[in-house]
Length: 322
Ligand code: DGY
Image (cartoon, rainbow, N blue to C red; front, side, top):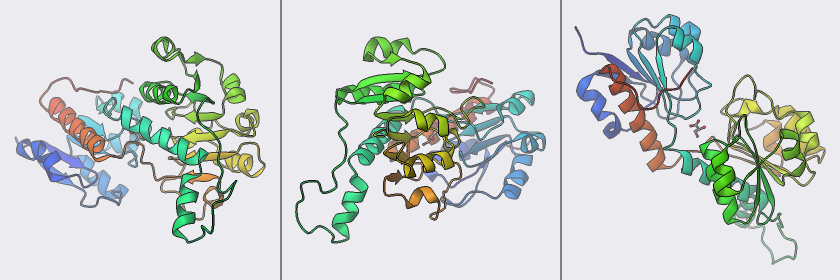
């Protein structure tokens, strides 16, 4: 019997995948910044016992059906909306994600994006580099305060809680909305659970960290933006499709809200001519929530450990429950 075949859908650092090379036949899509084409993915998955995937790969029923040997899909992300979990469970394929290792890093980015949007940091930095700074001005690039304001966190999982922790350092009042109450966040951080509408009405910063599910799809629609304060800033580090982007654009243009900081989009990469990117009060990032070297290494390592565990017949470390 040959060695199990493992396909990795993006070029990962050699030292990270070395433990896999020792045990298995491993093939890696050779590009770091280019997604594997679907036909190549299908061809590879057909022979693979394990796949290490990125959040940009669609692991759907059709692919799973044509991958008879597949035992594990290890996704280099905490979110797994790119994978049909039910179809995988039906076929006995274990799906793993990368929780915990990215919590603090993603919370850092969320707070950085909030600060950057509120204090117009990107705009200000470009202003200096473009030679537009002629003199100090009383209201030059004046933003809005973050400290002592109200933050409303939608999706109070581990990352939400870590964001709340940072918000407390800024003396913010923390509201949250989640499918279930997070008693730890209430006890340790004084976070207040409220309804979605109450949060929208009261928060100065509405921060979306919700995963994409049938329930959260376009949760932020025109009705939601209408409920927000006209001074509110919307931050999204969850998933793009939790937002109706047309409704967000209209809300920004009509002054229903004051600004948006977005790390995720319905279509990634977002086109540079997308209407949202033309607005001065939008700060847009290329889905870098967990992008530090330390954390991305930890995520990739965890995927390798999950693959080895499953291929050796052991329990994976971080399986997603269907
Ligand atoms: C994840 O892991 O789901 C994040 O979106 C990555 O930044």
